[in-house]
Length: 201
Length: 201
Image 1: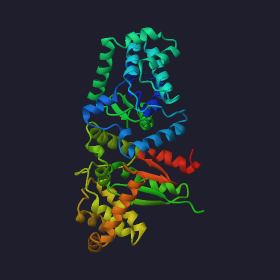
Image 2: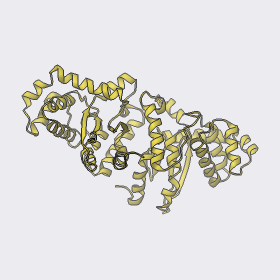
Image 3: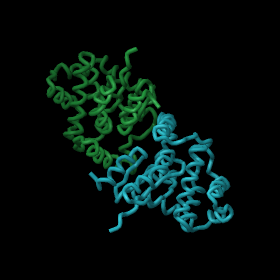
Image 4: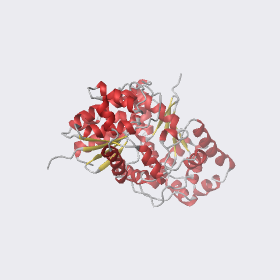
């Protein structure tokens, strides 16, 4: 039986999702696994469950900013605090699904490029033009992409991914499933790796 | 200049506080440091900041239970899910401060015994009698302790510790300060250890 890919749920607005995105493919590959990427809209999850986004909670919001900057240095990843935070990740997420329907590898490159634009350069990637600009940077055609973002199938794909995530218990980003076992947070990647190495514990 | 002790804030109701409590003294000692223990009432923090306790949040509460059981095995710590969760930690926390005013080492032994009773044996340690029973188990006098829990100075000490924690930005358990740098969560102990080893990064 071929090993199942890991399921990687994330929101482009999430800095901890960025940390995981920069490491998850290599981590999985070390154990002969691949990763299925699933951008979702955490805002929809928060709205549905009546939870306030972490960054907007008293005390915790201030801590998050400090922890993110410190953790970036800890992981050895560049990080520039974005001009706008949290961004609206609708356009970025739809761009992922539109691209993935054509070329999953290219979609993954786009996702990483979007994360880098937002969290390594601090750019606001909320708008369609900003997303198209990042896509152009990896050789994609801006006009095709912009038209694609309006396709009902693309909107449906994002909605379905967010609904599926919630149905599996996802309430934060990143959220990673390994053979049905769910792990929340970039700080759980060490447990994800041990789970892959040992098949559980 | 003598190195400052680490400040360790925790709630007896917190399973991640239990994980940290079983490791923090040895971790600090490896770097020539000691730890000042500060039990607090997170419920008071949640009430003041309008935040819902993690275990009571939709989706996240179910995940917490699963993550706690799995993390206990990961850390190699025994864990029995408590009969009552979350407990009211007022009596346990006051018992700590009453004892600490007499013998800090004994107070730390009491804190560890209370954590073990609650998270290794699953006992409900909300009540004064349950706390006194745990105290008796480490050779303390139950009647003196029970009388002590009513002392205004003891009640004040717990209130002051909780207020001081909140003033420093504490919103969860465990929360550890190393030379003014705050770290939230048992999963940040690896960062705490590196901070101690390198003096920051």
